Image 1 (cartoon, rainbow, N blue to C red):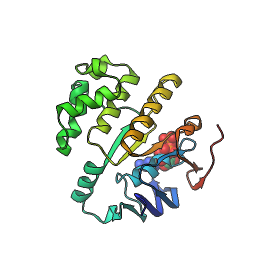
Image 2: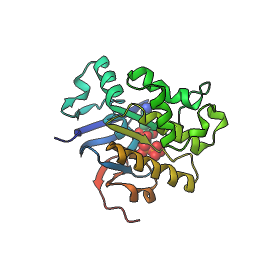
Image 3: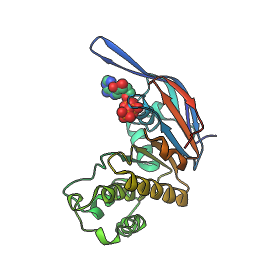
Image 4: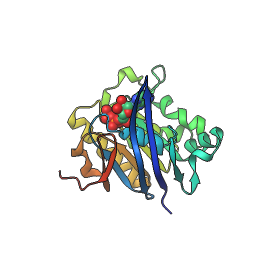
Length: 226
Ligand SMILES: Nc1ncnc2c1ncn2[C@@H]1O[C@H](COP(=O)(O)OP(=O)(O)OP(=O)(O)O)[C@@H](O)[C@H]1O
C-alpha cells in the first residue's frame, strides 16, 4: 500500500461567473520515503495539488488516502490530528513567528504535537547548522537561515511526510541549492517522504521522481532533462 494514494482528484475555482478547472482527475501514488517533485509553470496547479494531498484543501471529487485512511472522510478534528502527527509543511515565505526566537519557533509544533521538547528543538536547529542562532529573532536571520529554521521546525516532530511549497522560492540560486540539498539530506536520514513543489526544473535532479503539472490541467510524468 502506498503512503499517499490520490485517486481521480478534481479541483477548480469560481471567480465571479468564471470557472477555472485546475485538477482534472489526477491519480497519484507516493511511496514511503520517496522524494517527489511537482514541477511546472506558474498557475499550473502545483500548489493546489500539494494542498489537496496534504489535507489542506478538499478536492471537489476524488479521494486521498494516507496510509490507507481516507483523509477527507475523517472529521475535521481527526484530520487535524493526523496532520499534526504525521505531516509537516515548509512554505516559500517561511512563516516564522516574528516575536519568537529561532528556538521558540521550532518549539511551536513540539508544543502542539506534544512529542518533542527543548532538547529535540535544539537538535533540529543543530542539524540545519544553526547551533549559533538559537536566540535570534527571524529579523536577525538571513533568508536562507530563516528557511533553515523552518526546516528544523518541520523536522522536530519526526513527521512521516514533509510537504514543501517552493521552499527555495525566496532564495538566490546558490542559497536555494544549499537549502534544497539540506532538506534532501535530512529527510533521507530520517526516511521521511518529501513532496516538493517548485517551478525550477533544475532542482529536479534531487528527486526520486519528478512529475510535471501542465497548463493547470494535464498531469504527466516526465524524466527531467537537467
Ligand atoms: N483560492 C483561489 N481562488 C481562485 N482561483 C485560484 C485560487 N487558488 C488558485 N487559483 C487559481 O488556480 C490556478 C492554479 O493555482 P496554483 O497556485 O495551484 O498554481 P501553481 O502551479 O502552484 O502556481 P505558482 O507556481 O505560481 O505558485 C491558478 O490559475 C490560480 O489563479
